[in-house]
Amino acid sequence: MDFKHLVEAAEKWCSGNPFELIFAEENDERRLDFYAEPGVSFYVLCPGGTDSFHVWSESEDCLPFLQLAQDYISSCGKKTLLEVLEKVFTSFRPLLGLPDIDDDTFEHFHADVEGEPGPDQQQMGVSQQ
Image (cartoon, rainbow, N blue to C red):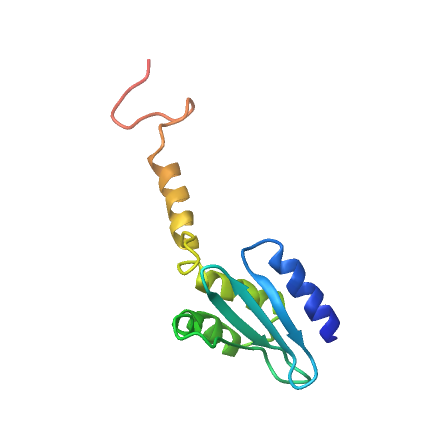
């Protein structure tokens, strides 16, 4: 994909989360740098030809959180920039003070299971006359 289109996709992605695209460089390497408060930063090296994406951070605090995204990128199949960025965002949710996505899903499911029976549902052990 043309680097200009990658930059546009990255800027659009940033509009829906706390990250900002702070640097985009195509000359030496096709690199996109991102930053969000409180000091969460990473960069993506974009493929040029047959290579795949690569994510990294200069921050020692951020590196362990990128493992999920790195594993995802190295798994089978080509990935798009947006897929990679979403996986990075998911990885950084704890650092950004956001709830884990899996927790939200579980709570939503748990609330549905624990809810009061609807008018068309009969409670076990209680006969309705």
